[in-house]
Image (cartoon, rainbow, N blue to C red; front, side, top):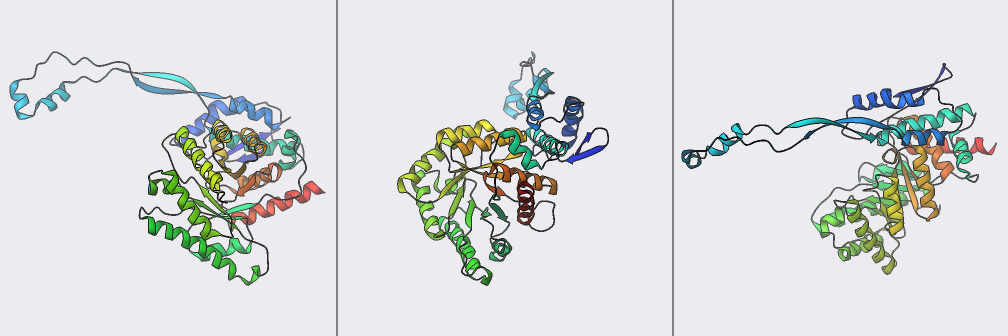
Length: 394
């Protein structure tokens, strides 16, 4: 939790949830020693200028490095040492430690810290200008006025059909699900098909939805599971996509990360090949890139290669809110959809800010996580967007 003190009295609170191996104490030290001194005395004239400053901040990090090979000494091993097998133990005991020294280098401040602080600065600037966050974003980025909320996706934590009922009653645009891996092809594909059909049955059995032209998108986050099942063979993976498309019809189907490679470049190459296959077969499955989307540069590489229909954009990985918004707008220019996401466990304040960012930038879809708040994350996002649109239209 961080607080920005405005004019010596008003405090705007925010969160910095660092999703790395760095301890929380390290993030706190970075905020106190690097971020806070840079922000002290700054004027809230615009959030983009402050975000740019955050993206350029660096911190000094100390590492311990080996400087060279250690001397092995002059002790000679006896023949008995070799015969008895004691030569390894004696060699290890006699081996002096490699010389090491501490070195320092500069590295950018953690992206999650930049995200959390910039989100708080965005709210503080909006307060200073007596605007909503959405209004400030529209003004600073020259975006057109909007009169519609962003579609919402809800994550389902299990494959039980009863869990989807509240989301279906709210008529959310998409239902997301991460299935468990089963290396038996028949069982795994059967489980995916059963999940898809359970959503369809739950929808059809709700009298509240009778006669309504509402069908949610089904989003399967596979995390490389088809690649593991078919040894990353694009032809076999395409065959699986065709079968899933047929099971989902007439519902729209999104597939995220059917393969998961060890490097970003390899991931993009395989996804590009799959996209070529999908276009050639003219199937309606929408491919979502989520893994290896660690920076705005990664997003640009995906855009340039045409490796996906949509990009799952986790804002804390990108850096400041300004950098994330610029990335959203770059995707829109290329007519690539964005599934906008924040921290895995968002605070209520972050969830409201994400809703306003989604209203103003219209990314394509907002992933509404339940987080720490009571009730549905989708309901909070929907109400916040409605409130924002009402104020913007007044």
